[in-house]
Image 1 (cartoon, rainbow, N blue to C red):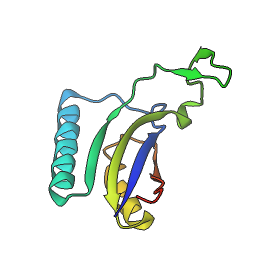
Image 2: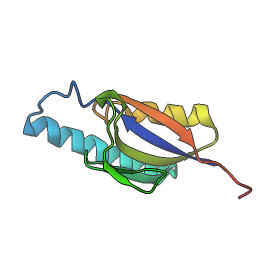
Image 3: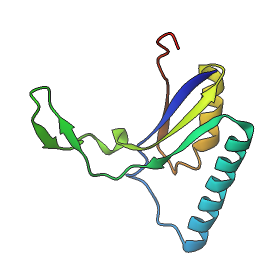
Image 4: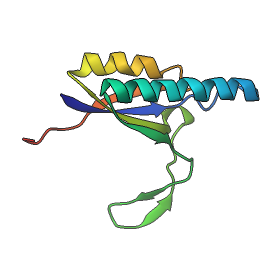
Length: 115
């Protein structure tokens, strides 16, 4: 089985205000997704949302504030899963798209260097 990373991108620019009840329902759905993925064995790390703060280390070893990208390109969080191939990983990503709150999910396979 291969390992894949889901990178949640964008979705911040059109995010609607949520009521406490909607936030609670969203958290319940997320926890159920984590429970199911863990029990079924494909969810390796549910990941975490990422804050907007960060820095970029340049090739000359200087450090600048960042990342500075369009909001549609910002990485808002990640998840690590295991799947038989890229199409199977994409099917798992489809389950998370509504939980991610908008934007899109980039699915990337970890390189396998003879392991």
